[in-house]
Image (cartoon, rainbow, N blue to C red):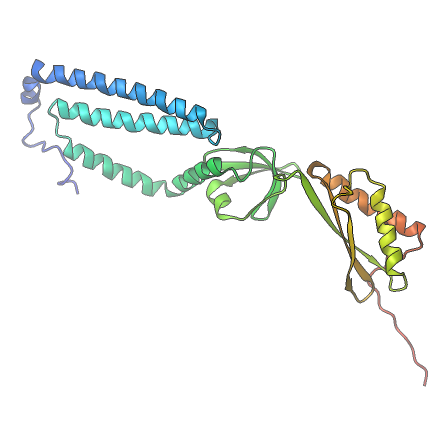
Length: 276
């Protein structure tokens, strides 16, 4: 490898090289440099203009794209100017390629998070402020970077998730839609009529103005269990009201059951003694 990538130092004479640098090489090299600098300036302006028009690319991704474009242009400028001065560029290009490959292998995980971050910033499965579930981690998105996604959990802790893990996981965005359905289950005694139980639950739902009448609340007998009959309840409310409706409904249903004589049973076993 070392023999393939070198500048032929044994036959290379620095004095001879400097002596060969006259106006015939320096002047064209300076003109080439000026053209390259102009190209960098024009391409940077064009990139800024295109990024400014795009609504899918935010400031973080835009800054990375600008830096990447400028970095690539400067590398090309160095190679082009070196070639104009008569410096061997074949070995230089090979050296840059090998160094780039070595760096990419050594920072493989970092690059994976980087490109995953770019994917998230472009596709936007969520934005800052959304309440999401990412691979079982639930919380509010605080910020999205090129390498990590920061999440605030409901118990006021901060989780930094590598972007590679985010793109590989299933993402549930609870804030995407304006309305959200509240799914609940309640149990009542076998002795209570189904119509009475459903009426008591509807009574509790009607007491909360945040619960939508359209779509209308849905209540149905869901399952015959060992100690009770289970009823499934589905309500609709604004996304921001979800937890208030959920916890409030739990309290109101118990009160409604008490008013209507409905028994909220628990797991138990009836033992019958038969005398012979």
